[in-house]
Picture 1 (cartoon, rainbow, N blue to C red):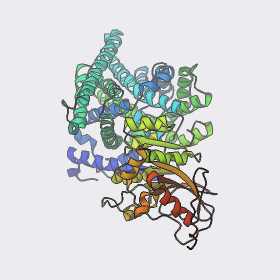
Picture 2: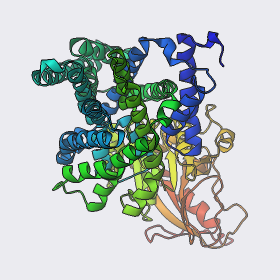
Picture 3: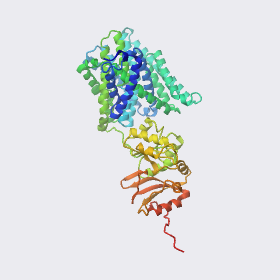
Picture 4: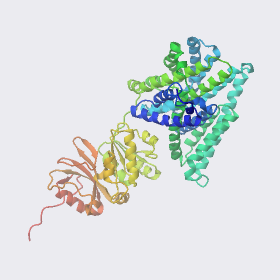
Length: 631
C-alpha cells in the first residue's frame, strides 16, 4: 500500500503530467494508439495499482482541472477544422451530429435497458453519454491511419461537434432525471440557454482573439499564445457560470472563428495549443483512469461487454447508415466511418460527473454507469484503434501513398531543383510560409503547401508516408537541418537532404552526417549567391552524361572559382533519379543536371568536356579541348 504522503494533490498532478508524457512517448515507439497506453498507465499508477497517483486527493478541484484541460483540447481541435472542407461534407456531418447522435442515444439506452437491466432513467443517461466519439481519440488515430480526405474530414468534424451536442444533452438529461417534477419545459429551456450562451460567448471570444492577433500594436508577438490561452480558459468558465456545461460549445465556437479568421499568428497559436493538448490529454487520461476501480469494471461481467459490442457492431453502423444516406460517400467509406467510433475524454469526464451527482442523490447505479462508459472507451479505442489500419486497407479507403520529394523553401534555387526532379517525372511539393514565393512556384506548375515546415501538423499535411526524400533548402541552414530531423522522426525510411552555406560556422558537414542526413549539392555552397543568380535568370539548367572519365577528378570542385560556375542538382542512372549529395559518385553512363552560371559558361563547359562529360541537350556546344597545334 502506498504511503499516505503520496495522497496529496500537488504530487498527484505532477506525477500525472510526467506519466502522461512518458506513456505517449512509449505509444509512439510501439506504434499503438496513445490512449491505450495512457489508460493502462493510469490504472497501474492508481490506488488499485502502485498507489502513486490519487485523483481523490484533488477533491472538487478534479472537475476544475478537467474543465480547463477540455477547453484547450477542444479549442485546438476546432482551430484545425477548415470551413471550406466542412461545407463539402456538410450533409454527412450535420446528420451524424444530429440524427446519428439521436440513433446512438436511443440504441445505447435500449442496450443498457435490455442487457444491464437498469431502469429507463439510468439507461437513458448511459445512452446520452455514449453519443460522443471524441476528437481526442479520433484525430491521433487518423494521423496514424491515413484515409481519404473525405472520410478524415467527416470523422474529425463529427468528433468535435458531437462533443458539444453530447455533453450538453447528457447534462440536461441528468438534470431532468434528478428533477423530473419540472416536466419537459426543463429540456427546452436548458438546451436553449446552453446553446445560446455557448455560441455567444465562444463567438465573441473568437472575434476578440482574432482582432487582437491581427493588431500587433494591441498584442505583441511574444504574447500571442498566452493571450489566446487566457481568453479561451476564461470563456470556458464564464460560459459554464452562465449556463452549466455550455463551456464546451464556447471553446469549439472560439476555435472555429480563430482557425478560419486569417490570423497572421495562427500557426504559432496552433502549434502552442498542440503542445498543450498533448500534455493535458495525457494528464487527463491518467487521472481519470486512476480514478476508475477495476473491480467496478469487472463486476459488469459479460453483460457489460455485450453492451459494448452492441454499440460497436449494431448501433454505430445503423447510425452511420441512416446519417449518410444520399451523402455521396461510397459504400466502403461509409463502412469505415461505421467501424471507427471510439469514445474519448469528454465521455470520461462527463461520466465521472454523473457518478458524483448520482451518488449524492443515492442512485446506486452511478458507479456502474461510469464503469460501463470506461469499458466502452477502453474496448472501442483498443479494438478500433489497433484494427483501423487493417480495415482501411481492406476497404480501400487509405489515401494514395505519395511519392517524390518535399522541399522546404520555394525560393528560386529550390524551384530549379524542383524543375530538375519534375523533368524526370518525380512528384514535388514545395513548402513555404511566404505567399510571394509560393505564388511564383504555383505559376511554374508546382504543388505548394503554405505553412511552417517545422510544425508537425504541416509536415503531416505534406503526407510524409512513402516520400523518397525531404530537402531543406531555405536561406537558414539551421532551419534546413532541423527540418531534416523533424522529418526523420515521422518517416524514418525517407532520405533527408540539408543545404549548407559555404564558410558558415552554424552547421557543419559532420553535424549533418552524424544525424543521418545528406548534404545537398554534394558540399557546402554559396547559397545566397546561387539564389540571387536564379532570381535574376542568370543561370541555365543543363544535362551532361559521363562517357569516359579522362582524369581521376570527374566532379567539379566545390571550392574555388569553378564553384561559382556550376553546381550539380540531380543524378540519373538506370536505377532511377536521386538528388546529388556527398555520396554521389558518377560512373560512365550516368547523367547529371548542372546549374550553370551565364557569366561562367565557357569555363564550366571546358571543365566538363575535359573530364569526360558530354552534353545531353542539343543546344549546349561541345568545347574544343584538343591541344592547339604547334606554331
